[in-house]
Length: 241
Image (cartoon, rainbow, N blue to C red; front, side, top):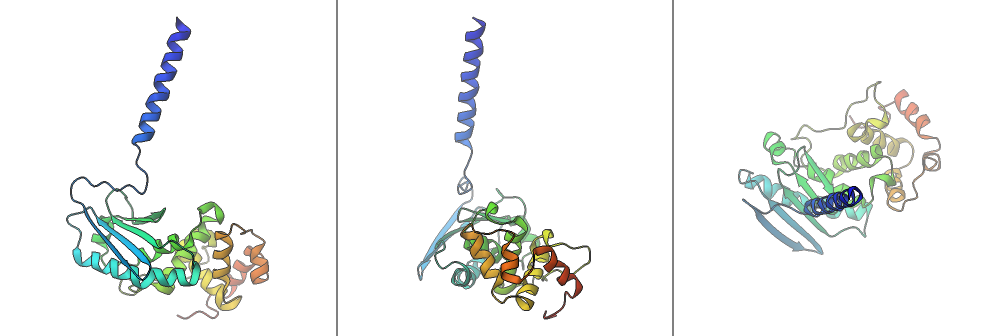
């Protein structure tokens, strides 16, 4: 009787876990209850699905984000991944708390962040680059993946100056593993002083799952730590102030 009871309990637990798993939403699923506005725009081989679930979100900001998509995403794909995804969803939704994030062709933007930082529309440029990259985090170090995305924002962003966004000035305490703008500045320095298309090559290797630490020596003539030390010794060499 005891064994039967334990077995039955195990079945109930497994059933409950399965039911809960089924209830979990995928990243791509956007809650359509309450306020929900969806617009699908297709042109020149691209489709943008723009969703807004916040009734207080600025319509003007929404238009700026949509306009930015058409100016930025095709350019990112042209340079970094000509075979990349042509269908993208941008959702303004409080389901995501933070700034913004991208996964499986869907970008979620926290409306509270944009309300406080209305000029920071190029957060979308960063997230679109993640979609253009087209590879999982494990294909390259996270710092590099995020550094390339901010490198793309630096090059393709349309409103960085107004948003008071720029590459982080060098500091002795920095390391490339600090990621984002710090890593992006290092990548810019490398392309100015070591190899013009190094970012393109690193991105390609990550997408093709051929990235290894040895690639730095092949592309730039030295291992990563040596390159960083060279950067530290002369961080403004070739850089535009």
